[in-house]
Amino acid sequence: MKVDGKEMRPIWLKKEDDKVEIIDQRMLPHELIIKSLDTVDDAIYAIKEMCVRGAPLIGVTGGFAVFVAVKNSPEGKLDWEYLEKECQKIKSARPTAVNLAWAVDRMVAKLRDAGDSYDAVLDAARDEALVIEEFEVENCRMIGQHGMPLIKKLSDQKGGKTVNLLTHCNAGWLACVEWGTATASMYTAFDNDIDIHVWVDETRPLNQGARLTAWELGKHGIKHTVITDNAGGHIMQHGMVDMVIVGTDRSTHTGDVANKIGTYLKALAAKDNGIPFYVALPSSTFDWVMKDGVKEIPIEERDPDEVRYIQGLLDGKLERVLVPPENSPAKDYAFDVTPSRLVTGFITERGVCGASEEEVKKLFPEKF
Ligand code: MRU
Image (cartoon, rainbow, N blue to C red; front, side, top):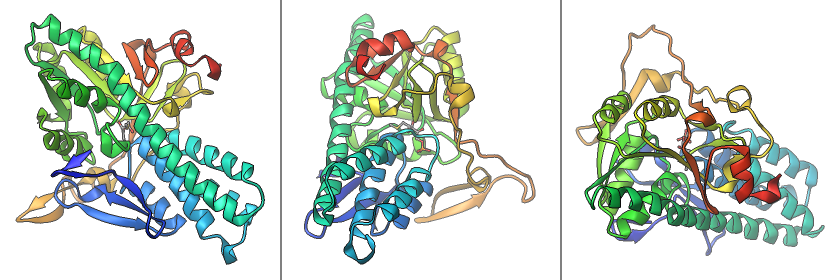
């Protein structure tokens, strides 16, 4: 997507020197820092510390991390034991987004197929990482195509008046590669001259909504307003939200949705107010094994300092400040699970379906 007129992605492979580079999202929107992932540890650090984040992008980074592992093979020789170990390390960098394991497993299968020559395996790793990246770009583009008519319908019902959408966290191109998942339908609607406005939950503790979604939407010229995480219920009660669209880190094929902490409360408020609550995701974010999301999906707990401190710009410099009393303990649950009964539907690259096993099976029969 464009940043000040320049095409940008959150990750890319530099053709001239085969190096992987990323936008370090921790400093956005105030600083645009580029980092290079030269080692597997660099890639793991980037995923863990959320220089890259968002389920599809974590998967794509996992794919490139496997390529880096092959590139850095000891003595430039093929060593399957080393590679398997590195892949396990990469897979365990963050637990909730299923895309990471999906991408690494897909990479390993391709490498195994490439035979026993180091050069062939290295080429296969580079090719497959790029294929995964483009696969997610196309998935997100298609999510936008399938989700846009839902917004168009609301616009028609309102006689062309502004459609008010609400989203949580950042499920935009920064979280994917292009388009985003939740934002794909927004970008597509906007590009098709549908009048939209987006309520952006700030999304504590790391403020991905206020920092990243607001930045993305602003760069694209989409009207938006940042609200506190707790404002959603109020504005829904007062008819200010026509539809909620969020992304997900892992959704069971039975319809339960893990997403950034606070999503569940938005789904409850949407249900209580009769507002459609859609979840946009590529097929790589479905968990085809787990059936009960609340019981089974691993919920990441992060450093409580993310809750205790808040980061922002002060006199042109990024600063972190402490909010609660010095000694108050804090807990940092990164995700929650919205049960399928609260989800109006999934927007996928193959179309829109209900959040149930039966409905998901209609779109992805080969997975059952
Ligand atoms: O902790 P994060 O920033 O990686 O969490 C991201 C989210 O919760 C997104 O909503 C989700 O990954 C969907 S991304 C298209």
